[in-house]
Image (tube, rainbow, N blue to C red; front, side, top):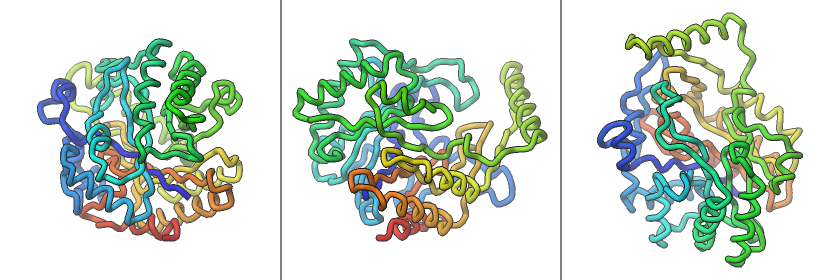
Length: 365
């Protein structure tokens, strides 16, 4: 079985973020300014052994690799940002490609979303627009195949694994898929294993994915469609909070925190209930915690104070996968280091390496 943890590269400064969010902005900026919103709320999240690192540091990326591999993580899946040839946050991957001493298998997830000021509620203010064209499909495919050629790139039966976060956003998904596979063949690969993420924002039917040449799906968590049903009163109250915040932004009044709290074990239970319907080409995702209140006023909080509950979910997903052919045994984790969403396996000051150790036990290592 292969375990693959999503990896956020936004822990270093770039000129664009300096301009949009202020000089020196990184993901740590949001993490540090977080505060507890209710008794027992575990905020702010404080990193443990790795500290408030900068991904410019080879030592940091080496330490991440050693920590991950020693706890059963087989590969990192780096988020990849491509805007008609312009890349953002590409430095960690580029440095890793040049530094062969970092012996960590990896793959790429194209996070093909338009960047806006959604973090402060201004979704309509575009920072970097995601555009597509047939010409750019080929250009992008050529670039990706250069990365696929690295000996550390994760390959399943010789096929580079590539993930598309929002496949339905592409105006012509089949053209991109065909272009990527054609370029890969030119580079000596028989094929590319392209996976589509399925979540509340990208729920494309299997038949349509097949028409585009995609037969593998990642069940990305957390997925609000799998949350416990809320009462009409609860839905109405949160709707009113959102309306107030929209008005407050326009007139300069303080916004309120619109919090949706969801029990972790119920989310895990609902996700596990779907496993019986998974084909061998439908892969589960697990997560230790989720709390995006450092990023958003309209926050969803799925706080898990017990690493053993995470371990149970990992163990169940592992048992499911071990029934499959070896090449179909892929377990995804959200995430290695999504600190501003509290979805991190990296140690923190409150629990140490508790969730990392729970993951290792859960997969039976």
